[in-house]
Length: 193
Image (cartoon, rainbow, N blue to C red; front, top):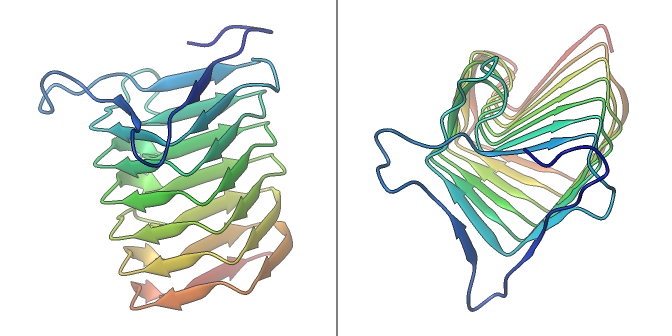
């Protein structure tokens, strides 16, 4: 875990990503946890894969709590958790931009991204083939969001396969929602918004 006031700066390049993966994908690893960490924290051009959340079952690859890291140009794939298999955020203001989220699985909420009580910017991401009961692509709860210019494709869930929001405010604009599959709200599901 990245502790209070500490920062993690992991910046790779387009040609050479920094790789976060376990020796054994079946056993997985615990992912990266930003807990009250410094705002300077950032992940750029990283590969985060095969994380399995065990601590409170929140956040597979990245767990954000009371922190506001920047996560850009990363590939986040094959992660699992109860909520937020790719990224889980509680009480944070992260900037999540130009990433690719593929094949992440959450048992309950937020296959790729779970946001609660936060004010994130989620922009320019490709989010596909993720699964969850609600919000396989992006799930937001009691949040003030900016979700724009994302491409959400072939995600599957019971409610809101692309984007699912409950008691959420903010702006959702210029996103492409393609072939997302759900019982209710394949592309977009809003409740009490």
